[in-house]
Length: 172
Image 1 (tube, rainbow, N blue to C red):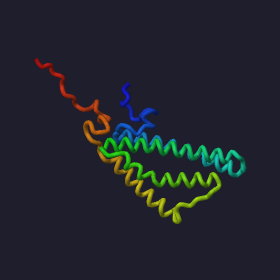
Image 2: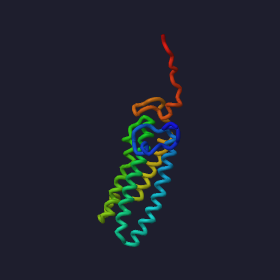
Image 3: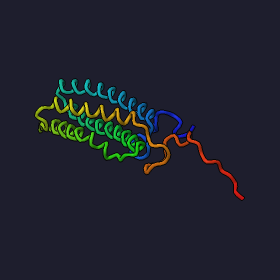
Image 4: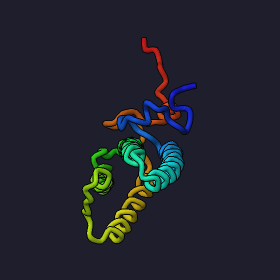
């Protein structure tokens, strides 16, 4: 079975922003990451509510693990977006714009964990709503924009094995 024969990519491809990813594999992998994220979030929210209620030192450990997982899952998400942008022919730097707010959110979460509350936004609900709308529009654009055919500066098309090849003719 070839590396590109299925919809889901392997773990080594998951954590690398290099290469290209077509629309359907992007959608399947993004859905898998979202399902995993929601499951992990559910478990950690339950753990954090228990640890905070019990007022134990476990609370700090659970919160630190939660921040590490949020960072990792956002990196995996960025890798998927980067590959999709590469398939369209755009640089992955465009995808970093979407994560500017996530970085600020992680800083805020970390400061709360260490006991130094930090509010970077005065009207968080409005800003989060605007950012959510921008992220949804951005996600729909990269989901429905077809990738470039053939090779581009980021590599071969992910479905290059499906494209017709030149026949090898012996000259002589």
